[in-house]
Structures are given as structure tokens and as C-alpha cells.
Image (cartoon, rainbow, N blue to C red; front, side, top):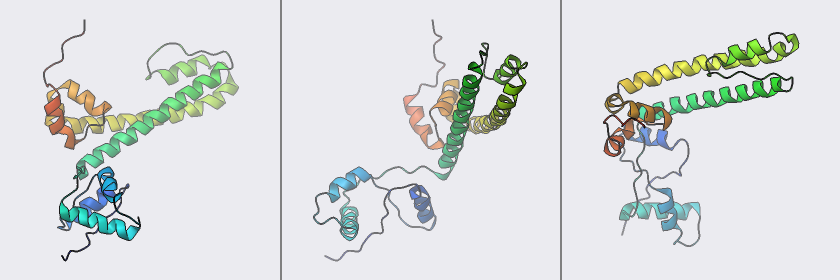
Length: 203
């Protein structure tokens, strides 16, 4: 029986980009479950790249594969923004903990308060120590710059969520979109599993 090799590529970071590019060119592309493919290929002797390629081609020809959903370009963009925001938040927390640790050695303790007033409270605590100010103020300046960038990300994500029907329907949905990295592709799933009614007040 005559058959042709099916072009295939292992999973990795460029997979989504390659998938979308081939679809744009008009190819019928399938992204398959790697663990299922590994089980199928493990039954074949002499594991080589050529034999694996032949095995995947046979698997596709026979239809013995599990297709995997690939996020849309819009969803990938949102996910990238959320990941970048998370990295900024993580760096801000590290700077805050560094500042706290450095001034604690000199007997200074930050008063209670929110994150917005953190820099102000640190500056007030060490205002009489000129040498310590030289060390800590640059950290606070860096943190403040990161905080402004985080607010810019927040405004961008909020504007995106307002254009999303599911997120606009519920404040709970909006919270999930921020905390659980919800992307536009997840809207149908969230509408299925999430009640859009207002959650009951906590006792």
C-alpha cells in the first residue's frame, strides 16, 4: 500500500507559531498529544529519527492520534501580557524583600500599610541615615518604575476584559481572568463551568 511521509515536528516553544503559519498557508495541520504519540512509537523497534517520522506518519494515516487544541494568536498575545505582568510583580516583591532585609540589619522596621505606600514608608523610616539612603533609594526608584509598568499592564488587561462578553458579565469572571491567566479561547469553557450570577456574600 502506497503512502507518503507526513511532515512532523517535535513539541517546543515555536510549535504554536509554526502551527499558525502553516494554517495561514492553507495546510491542514494537526497538533497531536505527545504522550499518546510516545506510547504509539514505543511499540516500534529501532528507535531512530527516521523510524519515528515513519511511525508518526503511519499514526496520522490510521487516525490513531489525539488532537490538541492550539491557542489562537489573540490568546497567545494575552497570555504573553499576563506572563510579563507576573514577572514584573515577582521582581517588585523581590525588591521589597531586599529593602526590608537590608534596613532590618540597622534596626529599622517598616510600619504597617499597603503596597502603594511602601516606598514612602521606607523613605520615612531611614530618612535620618544618609548612608542607608544611598543604598536603598535606588531600589525604591526601580520598584516604583516597575509599579508604573504594572499599572500600565493592568489598564491593558482591564480594557481587554471589558471587550470580552464573559468577563464583562461578572466581577468574579474578571478576577479569574487576572489570577488564572484566562485567555479568549477559554471563554466557552468558563461559561460552561462558571455561574455568571453574583456570588453570595460571605458570612
